[in-house]
Length: 157
Figure 1 (cartoon, one colour):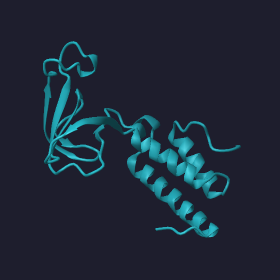
Figure 2 (cartoon, rainbow, N blue to C red):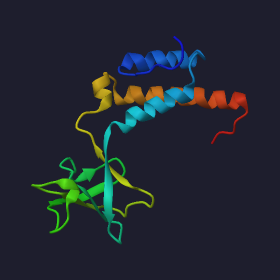
Figure 3 (cartoon, rainbow, N blue to C red):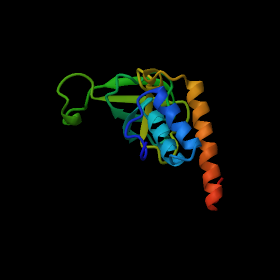
């Protein structure tokens, strides 16, 4: 194989890439980035349009998937959907709800610009890969990446 694969669609693709990384034929950092991209697909990235002063209530465009419970980066304690106020175009929505308000268990951390809502289907399930195996592969790639950086004289944390 020449270079990093353009697509990683199955568990076998990940395992083959890991073998190539361990053999020194692929860059571990590239595989780490690909694994992080797979992890990001586990969530709907819902942009926040308004944050309350206490940072415990956030407003997003309508998000039917928002539910009470653990999200990727916050814990949601209450969800309400509402229509746009008079004169608000709400992104061109003509009927139905325009906004979703979420009350959080703790204040939203500074710098957060989106709420990570768990996707209906896990990318790992779609790939035929269990969470434990994915974690194991992630750790193996990290070990190789750290070793490669050490060999190049790059400081690691």
